Image 1 (tube, one colour):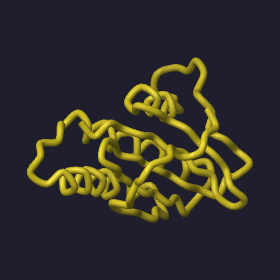
Image 2 (cartoon, helix red, strand yellow; image 1 turned 60 degrees about the vertical axis):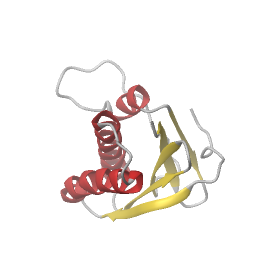
Image 3 (tube, helix red, strand yellow; image 1 turned 135 degrees about the horizontal axis):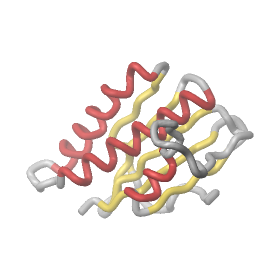
Length: 138
C-alpha cells in the first residue's frame, strides 16, 4: 500500500491542525462544508460527503492515537476528485490493516477507508507520515 500522493493539479481547499480527538466533530463538519462549498450550485451527493467525513474522522483518529498530536489534515481537489491527506509524526510506523477482532474493539479505520475511497495510500518522509484517500467528485 505505500504510495506517493496521486499526481495531478490538486489545489488545496482547506486544512486543519488537530491537537485532540475533541476536534473531530468540527473536522467532519468542516470537510463537508468545504466539499459542498466547492461544488457551488452543483449537487453534491450525501453519500460522497458522508464517505469523506467518515474517512477523515477515522484517519485523523488513527494519527492522534498512534502518533500523538498534532495531526495535520488537508483536503485538495482537481477537476475530477477530492484528495484527503492526513499527516502525523510517526514516520517509522506505517498504517496497519486490522486483523480479526471482536465487535467494539475498533481498529477498522483503514479498512473503512479502503471500502469508501476510490484509492488509499501512504508514504513517509523524513519527519512526516502521510495517509491519503482519493474520492471521485461525482
